[in-house]
Length: 152
Image (cartoon, rainbow, N blue to C red; front, side):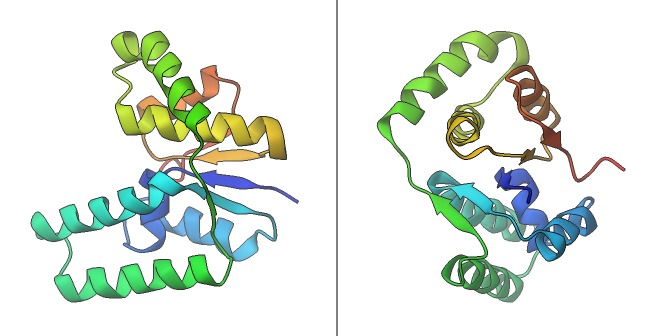
């Protein structure tokens, strides 16, 4: 049984059709393992979808439906939210110090990586699912097995 941690860049593909949506849907439909996101990912999914409305990629009506589907997946337990712990923020600082300059690692991505790395050690995380090439690369350096749903 495989367990998956989803970065928001991949998770949004479940609620808005774009490159990689088919792979994300396949993982969700075929996996009987855990689908995990960070608590901060719940904020990021809102931000990402709101941005899509702002740039006119998505209508307000569609964002409401997408968010309702997201909430339904969380309430049903299909998506499990990993609560934030203080050590995640401390580790994110380490990731930023080590990878921020060379790879342009961003704050929220460092936090996502910190959470995925920590649960990888605790729960035998199988895959880190991410559609951000920079974050995918750094996650691989960190020893995580990465799936980029946008790559065929």
